[in-house]
Image 1 (cartoon, one colour):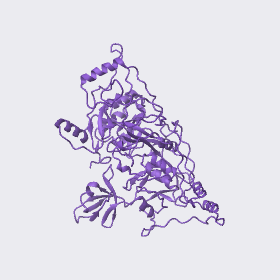
Image 2 (tube, helix red, strand yellow):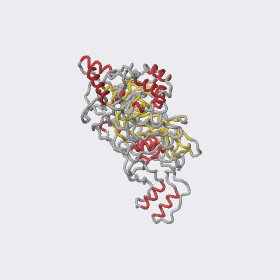
Image 3 (cartoon, helix red, strand yellow):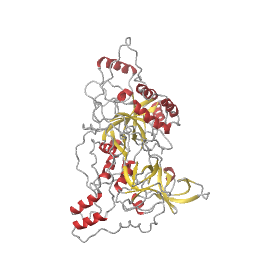
Image 4 (tube, helix red, strand yellow):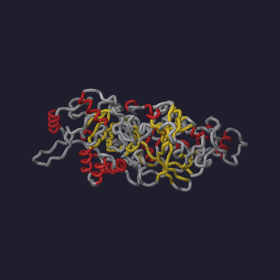
Length: 626
């Protein structure tokens, strides 16, 4: 994503020059542009999500394949020539040399560009973006610079599209976001809020627990962990902090984090105390074998739907009595996402992994640059998940034994066409994932054992592993799932309603306007213009102002975003189809000064190197400098 600072080109498209042009050159170029160019073609504004259709309504999928990374792009159409000053009033524009200061961080480069370089900027629905901006203000409104910005945004009429656009143009600088190798393209995927079937009580029908945050999950700062293998520490509201030897509440521990890495937002390990040792928190496999000291928010019927919920980060659970629970991300066990899904896994888990852009069989934490991520055209949507009982019977017919561990095969790939915006259909009730005695009898009969009869009562739950504690009153073990991913997400209950789920910023997400990002390169809450349509808008292309209000375990790199589609199966279908090559532009307040920017100024003025910051905007909650 490196738009040229001069937008007048002749001949075939080529990679732009970097740096700033002299004002005289820019002026001459603008005169030539005004004389030679005709009216620009404008794309229609995206349709706003409605209350009846909470899924984002402008699917960013296209039957036209995405351009390969690094390929030359056609030059965006120029703006219409300005009318003669004597016959029409002059239109207020951002001067071409009124740009921000270029700067770099450890993981990204940021080149200032005029707003006219953002494809479709003037065609986007500004009023939609204003509503999402006000959501960001719920979290940023009390921070320096943002208090004034949010107050000003509150005074804008929501129907004044030109006024809203003027607000962003006058209060922000636009920056092309580039990977460390100076490429400007990356991957844009989608995610959504799923619906599960569940119960408040455990049964053979609902054997899988949705855990709250465990009481023994603690936090250890990376700097503290690096201070030594044996330390005096004190527990302060889940956080282990350095303490003087022998001081009240202090204890000496051996600290061993193994090969795990701290969280990228807060630079903290997720740990537990084991006697006199501080060690990483339990992996998924260990969690499934033991009773956690954690509240079970609900029990669900499908292990893979629960895994999908953990990947998406939030969702709803429809209880057997008709009540609906809404859960949001509470915490994570500190282990990396390692999906390692195979073709034998269910459509649900495969779609979940694909939806959030997780690489099969590889750690998402290993990706530090979106340039290294594969580019692809939109993926096929998941077929309706096969009933687990039917899967077991089919497995028996195909000679795979009892089918107790069989999983529905992934559907064959089919061509994807753009999806027309429709309201989400009511999801069908899921069948229980736990083995059904009647099904067991049918499978036995298929195998020639005609004397088989259904069991009189459901089989007992698997016993805990040797040495494990008995189930706690608030916890309890569930059935093991066999999912190899060591990462595990814990949830918390939040109120249900028409608003979106809470993202990592702590504000409700807006379908079609919220994205999940890497907080090191994209500050949470900030405006980001996203484009997947190139210079020639087509059906399904995204050219819109969005807001970085969430994060994700697989969202790593500079030009990398996850587009929030909303709630329900329609949103899930659209999210699973979305994997596009895209570009991104970060909007930074004009009055903002960060260590990343001052390092850039120091480097240019003194001619010497400067240590690059890790975060664009350091923040104790959202991006802590190492």
